[in-house]
Image 1: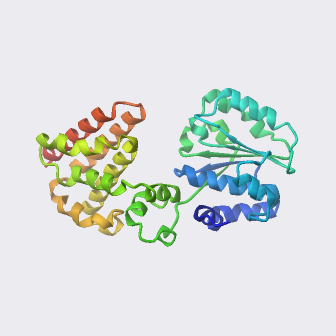
Image 2: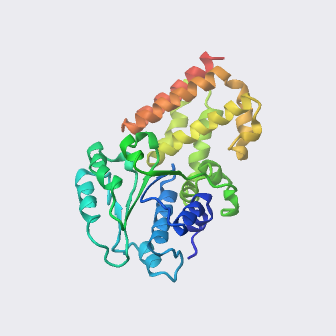
Image 3: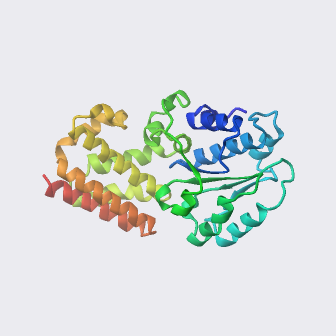
Length: 315
């Protein structure tokens, strides 16, 4: 086993706690993992499955090899695509009553449970509350408030923390690490993006170089080429204004974008505290519009115009 993500999971306090509970035969039958980092959550869930199967987490374990080659007959991962549907839940309920084939346990991983239909979640309630002796459920969520309270109450909830000193695992990747905010899955994604620097500099230009409405097209056009990363663009904008707010409050040492601190500091005087607060609200609204699949071009251009308007109105 030589995987950074797996190494980080195994070194985490959350996993060590579960290892201890497994050894003492006190581990819960239904566990809800909470993290914004889907990639980390899934890796955590798979390693936890290996622990539950035989307590071994290395290449010498057949269970481990089958789990990470996606061929373990007693590990079922849902949904196979999209979000969990009622028929998926019905299948889970049925399969949970069938004896395991290879191991002495059956494990069900259900990713992003908060995105599933309410009816699909309700179908799982009795099975989660009274699981078979040899059956375990591992659910993941990015937003626990969007998970039905009845599901939450039936699971042991574990919040997966951010990774401290992530630079130890990815030296020389300052921008990717700054944007990832301690989430290894995000960091790995950003490190693999060839156009990360271009996306970031084009987004930063909106805040630091845009001076009039005549320039909106000039600064929005480069970003329109990256519609596939539209959420990331809005998150970068949000982060820049978060750092501006920290500067205004005399907390420069807490800035995440220290690699471009001078550029952000150079425009601090152009944005009043009131403007920054209002712009952050506008950004939240724009990100919500994106989640409703509104036209990216329209949302972006309106956002840039609104940033400019608020910047000068709240001088």
